[in-house]
Length: 281
Image 1 (cartoon, rainbow, N blue to C red):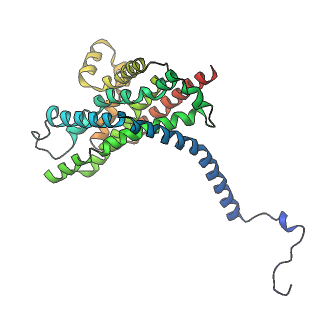
Image 2 (tube, rainbow, N blue to C red; image 1 turned 60 degrees about the vertical axis):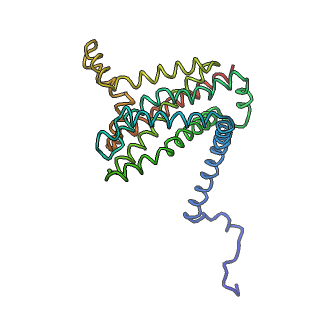
Image 3 (cartoon, helix red, strand yellow; image 1 turned 90 degrees about the vertical axis):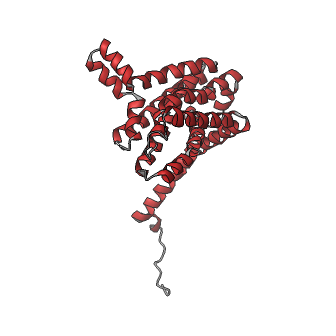
């Protein structure tokens, strides 16, 4: 041809596309599928987050969280009397704080939907039960993450008073966020069992206590008097408090991170199964 271009033939369209182009198209298809999966989750997330802040619930929760953290840190934890620039007194009580506040925040997630009859309406929308569960969980987790962000002035105070190990503090915040997610996942699953928020709160507190207590020294000593050592050690291994204790001290063990991630995932799967069974009925 005069311009040097390759002539088009009826076989030209059958030539295989370059590998780079096939990879680009595969990535684009995967991104489109991921976007289609996460758009309903984002919609549920926004709906739930607006619900928290449209009422005094989120504000009351944040105020109670900050007040209890201050009391436990400065009074029970003897923050200034210790004479050390760290946030151990701040993080030490988080397992027991989340033991009550996590179920309190999660008890309305599904029980209120069942009581008001909006669960059926929610599940008739173009989304799966798993997407609804993840969206609601992320909204509650976002409120707790905001509560943790509001405690960052504690970090600034410690930095002003001394020379703390910022890596240890960052690991403590990461562990606290994962710990909060675990308690919320348990509370959300309990909320999906029935219509009563009170029953959901009691069930969630009981389950969270079972996951927390075996990590405390008094409970371990009591169990050691009644149970064989071969049973006490596995109970301590599954304790939220024991797992968080390592992160609180700055030990980023992959086993602890996987433990919390797996716990959250398992209870979200259980939550999804409960919601799906309600959808069928």
